[in-house]
Length: 371
Ligand code: 13P
Ligand code: SF4
Image 1 (tube, rainbow, N blue to C red):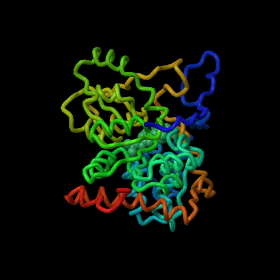
Image 2 (tube, helix red, strand yellow):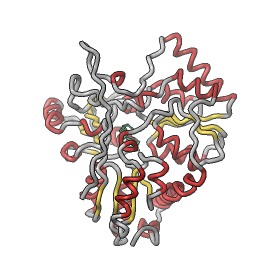
Image 3 (spheres, rainbow, N blue to C red):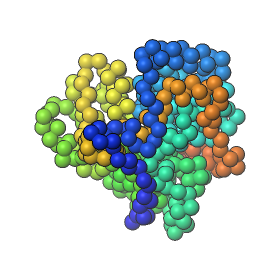
C-alpha cells in the first residue's frame, strides 16, 4: 500500500543543440571557475576556515574541489550518517556542510549551539520535496499502530513526526531489529529503498511513494548489456535504485558501503549505479581499478538522466567562500521543532554506536515505537 505520488516540476527544456546536463535542471549550478580562480578561491577558503574556527563536512556527491578541501582542512568526506556524527562530535563552533539541505538541518538539530553554513540553502532533494509534512502526517495518522521510520532525506518537520530516523547505511539493521521485535513499519519517503528493505527483512511495511530523481533513472536492461561488455566487472548499486537494477548488483549499500566494497572486492573493473560525484573518491582511493558509470536514459533522455544530483551540483567554491565571509547560507531550525526532530536522530546514532560496540540489535530498539 502506498500514498499518492507528489509531483514536483524538475524538468527544464535543454537549449537547442545541447546535451542534457545538470546545468539545465532548475537548480542553479554554478559555472566552473578558471584554474587560476580555483587556486585563489581554495586558498581564500582555507584561510576563512581557520579564521572562523570552522570545519567542513562534505558529501561524496559534491564537486571534487569541495571534497578535497574538506579533507585537507581537517574535515571529512562521507555518507550522510557519518556527516551527522562528525558534525555533532567536532569541537569547531562553525560547521560548513557541503551537500544538500537535509544534511545541514540534521547537523543544526544535533548541534543547535553551533553555526551551520551551507554554500546554497536551495540545494534540496527530491525525496525531501516529495514528502510534505502535512500529507505525511495524515498518512501516519491513518496507521497509528505502525512505527514510523523515515529516511534522513527529509525535512526537520517530517523527522519530528517519526519514531526512528535511518540512513541507507543503517536502515536494514534498524528495520530488521524492529521487525524481530514484532513491530509493523510505516516507511518514508523512498519507495525503492523501502521495497529493498522489505524484501531483505520480510517486515510488514507500508510506504510513502517518493523517489530520488537521480537513482530512479538507472536502467536494468541497459545495465545488463553493459555487463555483457564487461563480464568481469562487479556491479555496485545504491539502494535508492529501482529493484530490477538492485537485482543485478554484486554489492548494494550506502555511499560508504559502495566505497568499502570497491576497496575490498577482488576485481579490477566496477560498474557503479550511484551519483557520478562518487567516482572521484572511488578513483582516488583505487588507482589500479576502473570505474564505469551505470547507464541511465542517457543524454537526450531528460535533465534528470545525467546521474548527477542537480542540488548537490549547486555547491561551488564561490558560494562556499561567500557563506564563510558573510554568513549567508546559515541554517536555522526552530528550536522547539529541532528538539522533537532530534529524538529519532539520537535513536539512530545510539543504535549504530551500540551495534558497533557489539550490543544485540533487539536490546537497542526495546520500548521504542508503536507496538
Ligand atoms: P548516503 O547516506 O548513502 O550517503 O546517501 C545520501 C543520498 O542522498 C544518496 O542519494
Ligand atoms: Fe536527494 Fe537523490 Fe540528490 Fe541524494 S542524489 S540528495 S537522494 S535527489
